[in-house]
Length: 410
Image (cartoon, rainbow, N blue to C red; front, side, top):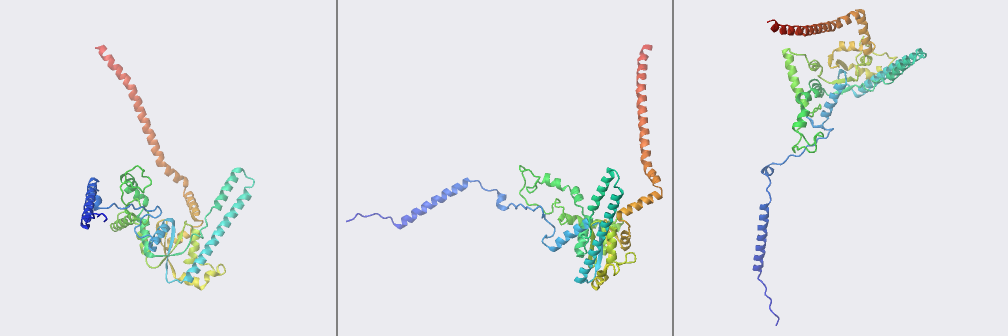
């Protein structure tokens, strides 16, 4: 008969497993009690992530992916880079009329550039013929003139007629008139506050050993001083309010924005110029706003200008005004700028001739008189002080000798 094996009941096995698991939980609880508990603020709040804005895409007041935002940026750059802008009101021009006007405008401007280059080349050729037997100094001067002519800019590719969004253009004009990034940064001292008081890890000027707060960048920080920033929006809004209040009270100079505000109504088109060129302005006026002072080209000279599509588009354009060097000009002022012969060089030459005719030497003497009188006054005062010092130095030994003689006499 085989030996009997002792088997434990299942109930006993289950109780032993339960005791083992309870002992394990006790050990785990003891180990957890020994470890350090996290701080209270970490259990209630979380650390915000670091907002790393790209260098070429800083935070803006409006979403940068919108077309309106990009138009605002484009108009701001246009106003700051164009010293002369003509404003037109267009009334339901068709696409073929726009194409015809732009074609004829580009053709006329290219023709003017070619004429100017040919005129300068002819002048250089005359200088070469006249200075063929001159010394090396004149040859060097001729080379400088050749370099200047070859580097002369051609404006035909930069002068383009474009349609504007009136509301966005008005907002961009407010930013340009009432917000200066350099002045805003200097007044608020944004860079020093950002670097010294609140260093941030995304700033390249922050040393690696500096302890910084793990916080997100604030889009309202004045260090973001571009035209689409919130700082620009707030400063321009406050500047507009201050300028309007000063205008109503009659204190301070009037802003050019309020002079241009009446023109910013209805459908607008702009013709920007990269430089103030009276010759190019005269050509544009003769094409887009012909008048007795600037007559339109004849059919024999420019037959394409007299096409029905071009003529229909020109009749639907109305010249409103211009912005020249930050100032607003009406139609008479525009015609005066376009009528300057020889451009800015001609204006300087006429100014020199006018000064010579009324007595340039007398004007020079008058301007130098105040400086000369101030110089003589200072020199006279200097001489008086030197004489007083010399007199005091001579009197001091004599007084000392008298004092030494008084006790001996007594």
